[in-house]
Amino acid sequence: MKIPLLLHVAMMTVATPILSGSAAARPLDAYRDVNRLIVLSLPNHSSAEKVTKTLVMRRLQIGERDLKIIDVSEGRHRVATALRPAPGQTEAIRKHLGLGAGESRQVFILIGKDGGEKARSHGTLDLEKWFALIDGMPMRRAEIRDQEKNK
Image 1 (cartoon, rainbow, N blue to C red):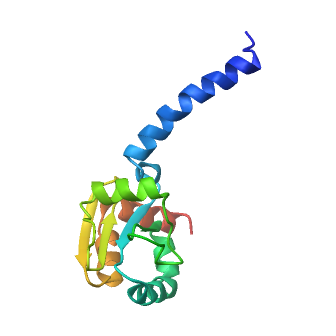
Image 2 (cartoon, rainbow, N blue to C red):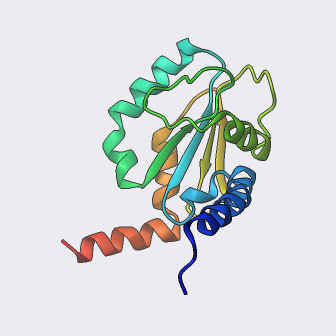
């Protein structure tokens, strides 16, 4: 049975708010089972420069671990190499992760592929420590075994 174009458009219009509503409620779910995340919130641009340099220098190790960097800093985008969600999603992520308004410290949160928070640090991003943590996770160990088999 063919659906008339006008009816098809009307159905899409009704379905879209439902889909976008659920996406807004859980904006990080799009990464679940695909990527690990480092969600960061930085209080100012000067701290962002150091973080950006660290991320650029370690981009290969970040990529090997399927990590995406998500910047939920208040106000303007801070880290050029990070993904920046839409304003509504940024606020939803901040609320979900308990990041208060006016946070004066740098905050870094590691989210696993299962969507759970694995680590949180304030002040500094210790990628070596987090890489070791990730590499010890069962899913990551399985990924490493699979990569070694395919060599």
